[in-house]
Image: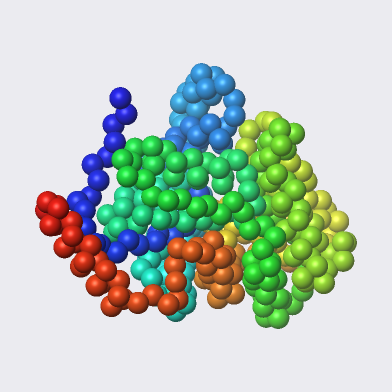
Length: 369
């Protein structure tokens, strides 16, 4: 028999709320070997992330990777860790949630809650959904913050939501946003962010649009990620007025020996360095918040490879983070997906009266509260 969670105590007549949950990849609690080991184990144990036979992978993961990689990863995280705010991915995502709460608060009157969670690490999906349940959310919109859909990111984040709901006796209504790789507001926010950077720092010879990589076999099996990245790249180039020879779409963060989707970002930058390219700028449109993959892998590692190969200037253009145009785009996407759940004409007085009447009828029928 399944075991279901005990639900929060219920008071009849309480006005239900709508929950909006932002989902991002995750982060360790600290830039240390001790914190990295459980984080990496959770991340790399996800069958959506590593699609090889479980028994074989268990031996590789526990016998090799978790014995060597935590220390190396801790050093990388330490290089980007903010002394006051901690993990960049976490604090940027938290700020985005707060800004979205304020943005929506100016446009809708019915009660709602905005929260955020990490697929791996903390705050966990379970904890965020539990908080929403305790606050009376009976409808939840989940928004994976991955513009381009991939089974290893978007689907995995939603898996965590579904797994939590399997433990619920009283499940909320659920909506999800699958992707926003070609959303007009998202593309405009990206273009504006880049243009503002160029106004302050000048323009490059070539703009590299670097997306997180995935194994080649995922494309062959029907994952749409590769196509969605290229569509984002094309739309962004059009918004910036770039010719085909002025930008490249590449893929970073390769792991293991298998072939991943190409061209690889590091290889491309090394080739441009050897060609004595005067200046390249790199932007990462697949990340709406700066994190290890942008601040360390791109802004440090790949930069060094480009310079060592003979390249000139290297500029990393920061992610959208708390960019106001991005918050506008996120807010508009959220509103359109909340249709019928929230209202700008909410009447608090009428809602309170309806709640009191409902509670009185329930108590008359024998309810405690």
